[in-house]
Amino acid sequence: MTTDASAPAPADAAQADTLLQTSITCSRGFAQWLAMHNCSIAFTSYQTGQLFLVGVLPDGSLSLHQRNFVRAMGLWASAQTLLLAGLAQIWRFENVLGPEERANEHFDRLYVPRRGQTVSDLDVHEMGIDAAGRLIFVNTRYSCLATDSALHSFKPVWRPPFISRLAPEDRCHMNGLAMEDGVPRFVTAVSTTDVVDGWRAHRRDGGVVVNVATDQIVAEGLSMPHSPRLYGGALWLLDSGNGALVRMDPNGGARETVAFCPGFMRGLAFHAGHAIIGLSLARHEGVFSGLNLQDQLDKRRTEAWCGIQIVNTRNGDIVEWLRLEGGIRELFDVQVLPGVRCPMALPTFGPDLASFITIEAPDRPLSERGWLDPLAS
Image (tube, rainbow, N blue to C red; front, side, top):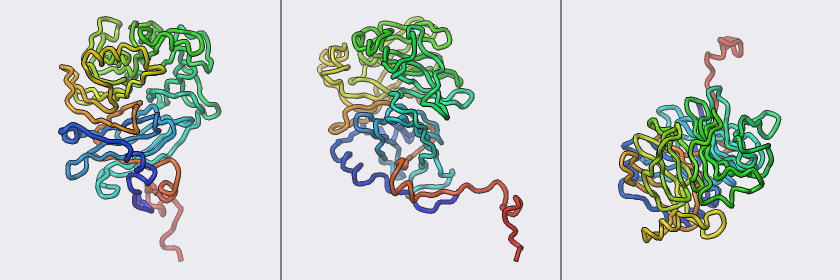
């Protein structure tokens, strides 16, 4: 791979202004934890429209790289690829750096937007890649799982048994997706209602987990559940309205609270026996009002906060944290980037993207492919 320009600086002036309005603090060992576990963290804030990439600089200090995206929501990540759901597009970013290459001397991943699939405003939440390589995403507006289409906004692949038909009505607020071996296994929904916006009246205890393969409800009585994940032989989820990280039997058996986190929980990833959780401030109006979360915060004599908490899955201890105060009040999704030390990304428009050109090396010399005869006069 060859490049026509060096990578741009991590943030432009407008993005710097946003960060100046936000106080960012972290636990003393946060950077060391990332370095020790050889990973970085990506998270989004749809409220302010941002993607954050958190890694470690060569001197051991924390790197916090930020880009602006309109209504940045669901994330999917691997060491080489990022998928980001925005207002009307799902963006695919690819790392263009080789193993020994660095951008701006210390970034070991440079994620460049290579494809943007326009799906329109579907309120896309969580995403996955199935065994056939298809994008699978939670289409919250139409209460279904969907994949992208070359011709249309989406192609539905599954809907819960309590949803009678596809309609742009956000009937149950389906929001979370658990994949296993390239197959959608479980989804979370705030309720089982089948009318427009019906879920809002059932936020406190109407939440469910549904088995995609069998259409069975395997857990109910949850409060605004989010982010189901299969990890270590268990099904994990965020019982967000109660502030609880929950572990349960994936076959619908007993469930237990592993940890309480002081905030509205959204976004869950696992790495090396730890859960990485996104927290948001609990608004006192709208969909966050009237939840048991506020009672739990009052009981502990604390207030909700916005940021990332890393939880030991064995004992529920919060081992490290990163906190944002000020302009950024809500996070949406969280992903771990395994094997990545210090990542950055380019924006989807503007001079930084326009001037950054990479060229893929041919598999064979051009002369062997009949494109060029170096001996020709």
